[in-house]
Length: 197
Image (cartoon, rainbow, N blue to C red; front, side, top):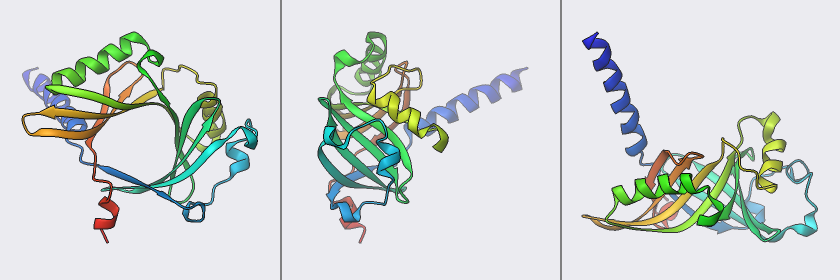
């Protein structure tokens, strides 16, 4: 019985180590439309009239693990982001939010985590995200995002500036719909992908 408890404790400890030890850092910069992967706009925007899209921008994100692409646009007063793999397959959809857009219990849990981790912390940006589970569900996931639905599968991505003993540093924190931490990474300098070459 003691051995079983020890194994369970060890697994819990190692599971937490993977959340806090991740070093997958990201840097993003704007690119031209021609440099963006070929995507099926008709499939992505079936429920949306092209004239509703404003301020359409294309970005490339490079991190230590992979390269992704982001399509940013404004629609009905919300600033959306659609993230793609390099081959044009949709990864997730999200939009910018503020504190009042997050359920109070969820926001309190996120704040509790950040305040325990840092001496001083400032949330610079917040996003509500809908991850694509399968290609078959991509259309319904996009529709859910465009309708701003609150679902138990929603995730919140926070771009923060935190201060601790080592100084100030930019980070990205990802939380689930309950406010539990999923991932925590340091932000890379804006010229990181240029340093690689």
